[in-house]
Length: 239
Image (cartoon, rainbow, N blue to C red; front, side):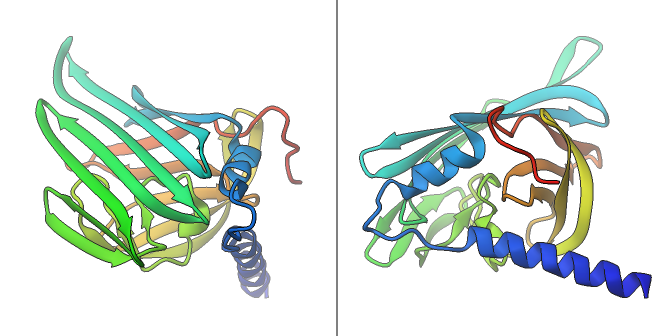
């Protein structure tokens, strides 16, 4: 009986989250993409990045309006040291444009220990076409990138990998609600686990805000994105 109640509650939370995220903005209100992101996050969000409990980096996501599109700028920096020697360093930047709820342009740059790669994509007709280290790709408009801030990704079966340019087959499996620490205190968020070509775990609150993420690095270390500023101060928190 307790299991049934938990399953029903988890399904209800997932349904509410999907309903709040999956509505496609109409072209009659071209500013909806920016307004929606701004209402959730304000001008920007920030995460501190931990490796096995030690602070090693940060990521910021900034939102702005560019003509009739939502512009999203991401900056990521990670540096791992031992005995004051840096043995792994990674920086990542991306600029994307969104219109009518869809990704229409992407430029992403990655630098891993001096090895630089790039992924570029742009809308052409009904497709998003691009290239990256994995080669050229073309996929229908409406696909999400691996940026995580947009919880509309829940329910997707494919993502554009912004590191290598592959179109990855994935599935997000809900694991139930959990308590997550944020800049506005502890909130209840739905835990999703990626299955398929991406191994990741991500948490979204009931409003659809990205509030936490974790995955295992190539060396088996636990990488966590902990919210430093993911809920604007003017927002009211759900019970």
